[in-house]
Length: 157
Image (cartoon, rainbow, N blue to C red; front, side):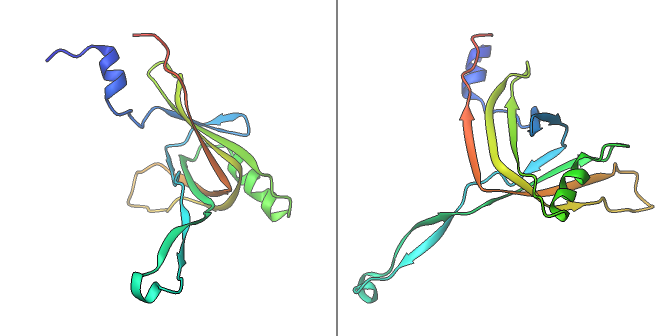
């Protein structure tokens, strides 16, 4: 069965390996981004006939997002450390973060915008003398809102 490029682009799931992360306008390389999820706190409503009909459930307040960014440590790249130090100085530097899922040309197809994100935790890598893995640092962030934008695909084939 022959399938043309336009069918593949419109019917097949997008690969997750081609993405970029921009923090406050600067594009940084990360090996993994996790935690992009919208979640609402459930509310249980018990009325006068709950004993007979059961309770009713409904969505409540939106939960804040907790996103984790992981990347390899590069010599003299201390931008994440500098950012988390603003929390220690009681001047939280909140930044917008954009994660773009891109096509093969680098054009964004879907964007996730974390509004007013701030760092909660910066983890150093685990040190192991018996391993030759890359040193990976991770930063946990909290954001109050997530906006998702689907971009129109270009007419390129």
